Image (cartoon, rainbow, N blue to C red):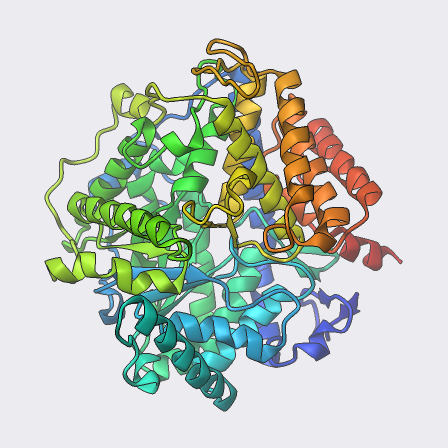
Length: 638
């Protein structure tokens, strides 16, 4: 570890290896001062994460469901009374001009694994030339974390936002390529003037969640919150250029579970604004609703974030995982095949309904908030028939969300922008702020609806899909691709079945469902001729092991396009070891990403097994999650 300069009594930042020099354009003096200033929140972040673990442990031990807060309670750390939050007795944000219309928001990182600056800038160029109204440049679920990708991500964004000549050079080349694709796909070009097109898309950044620690920095010998690092580096390095261009400073905040945590975020945002001499509320935030506990506290979260809050987003995969995790103690809660858990399914339908009611509840000044719909993971790459079928489904999904009240939705690939955006263009309204929905309820019936199961298939085919994609995702993560185009191995080579863009959430939920099926004795609902299993057979350890062997063998036999040959003796065996450890242990690990993170840049299966065991032992014996870069800890101790 290398140490930054320390002034009297200030916290001491330690930046690993030679990164402070190699990334001096990101770790600027101004950024380092801000990071040091913001490290004052590190102890509270650690406390809040321990509180999460305690709540989770208590629910499992007491077999207790999540419930609504008491109306007369005060939201911890805010002074806001719960009932006042529910009644809209708080002042929220006015939606800024460049967020008024967000029909389509693209998502994806601004960096690629082990790539030079120009290659990374291509990601930003595709995003800003896509025709999406906004682009969430991801620092979290879709950004690989091997080597220095989090810093490469920040570098790309800084160069693009500063309109660096190198970015313009890349953007001009990318525009030609995008138009060539569009002429073939649409029969027309999609970019008339690439320079002016670069100003069309609102730039948004997703910081890593409170549950994660940074891989490169420690403070006074302790791990430093990845949330604080991400927000600091992005805002400090870009706020002047964004404001000069008349653009808002916008963040997406992931994985919030409670209003207390939202209040903590609000205090961090306000502190950073004060440090930079910005007015409170200058930094605007969307909140991803991807945790079950959040849906019990939506208005409370809005109130806690106050002037910073502009809207919620409904993210399918993460939310399903959180429901599975929060009900891990309930033997009667067993999910069906993941393909059945669409936004109109049982608990998902009720979750979406609560979000749209929450954003359409006015605050004390009559302001409403935005609802950005969920992810469209399809990519228009495949056979003519496959693409046509998938695009039809994608448009139907967008039309449903628009009818339900969403002001826009997410796409996972730039090619989808001109396919999905017309759904909102036809309607023509900039947003759906203030649509009339029934007010939120807080009854036992409302609570039960958030874990409502409905009859749906639970099949061997479904288990194979869960296993195959989970293994592939873990392998992609180890290769530095936290966002990857994936499909089950049985469909490799079948261009009628399209690849879907998947990120960390897809791995989390697939393993959670497999864990449920084994440890809750899930019964299959259909016969399966290939395996000889019958409807009513219990999905047990023997079945899991058999399917795991078969699906793993398919990946080993796959061509280099679907599974990199080099990964078959490096990261793929580690992905399998993590799948086995997570799914088979009767104590459910709280985060799949933890097991992946502690094995980043490691290709030794023996070391991986040691680290997996170390993590699980620490969690089960002490309730502590290992969230720090183990290589950094080793270096610090030398």
